Length: 462
Image (cartoon, rainbow, N blue to C red; front, side, top):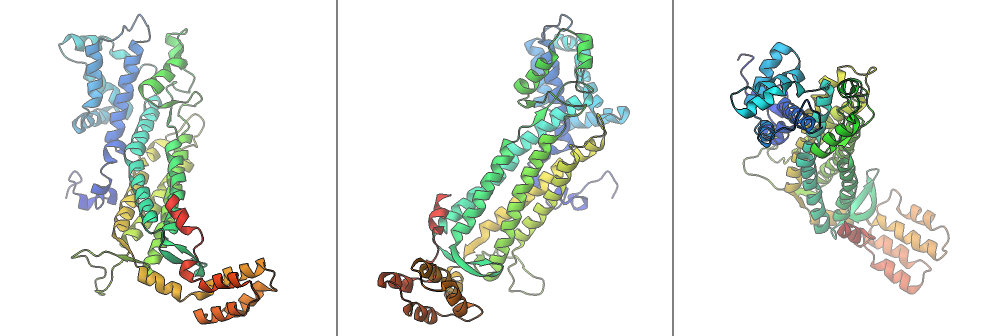
């Protein structure tokens, strides 16, 4: 195999090999192709805006010229990206290659070509490369978040919400420190995850992608050298906010400081952490028999143990969320740090945005697949509860406290701690208490499966 041949089986990254299909939605947005596409968009919109700025040296472009320019963006293809790469092999500068590619598109014999060719030196006018790059990265991240990542996360939340409602009344033994604890319901445990994810999702969605187009060190130096009386700050803000639909950052060095990126990547990492927590819990519940997994014909759980149905989807999700968070955490910690006005360490790191978000998307896919296989094993849940009558020590001693009986906690501790407790021994203890008749009758009716507090209501409310 030569270095120019590519087969997914030879991919260095599993995102471009084994898992390529699962993350394909991110590829046109966060790949190098995606970066080139957005660079062309930014250059085109800046060029058009300059024509409308009122400069006598650059008259407003005709509608035909504008349409042709915007068609470069709309019809941008992999072949176009390859042409830009070919130019870059000469320039050894990726942004300048985009500028030259746009100028080459002006060549031709029509009046529109002539119009554009006359104004060609206003392509990339007064811009530093980072003016184009930072806006491109913001457009890439905004599209990836809004079009791919949030819809995938919303799918997970919707599935969990349905499960919370469906299993709201199914009692389940809780475990704190790995030991039996007060019962809950399956739905309430899932509702807890939904509530956490709703908060995490809101944080992701609230981040405003920032952009700047203010020149080499953020002061509009070159802009003012050409037209000293023009309000370049207002002009730049209008291009960024009205044409590119981003948020203008007025205070920058050569680079946009990337603080919003850190905020966004940290927000995704928080969601990943919640989902790792849930994946591990489900793994444990499957181990306890609380959940069963629907099997698929032909699947094999172990090469030597035919009976096994492994929780592989939850294990894959956990692993991929961990990888995602490792990359995203590095991005969030590194990108806001720049030596003086700038260095190039951010450039190479930014090319891995798709890696971090790709592993998160892969985690969403694995988790969704695993959730789709789950079935609640109500018999196992009921059996576990019936073997844990000791959990009723909590309500009994709480009622004893209400009515002023002596040493309620200590009495129940003596009765239950480290001992096998049965329905009969609990009831015998209740019968011996000096409680009002109605309260004693209420305690005698209590079972582990019926002691779930507001769990049902909370699960249905989410």
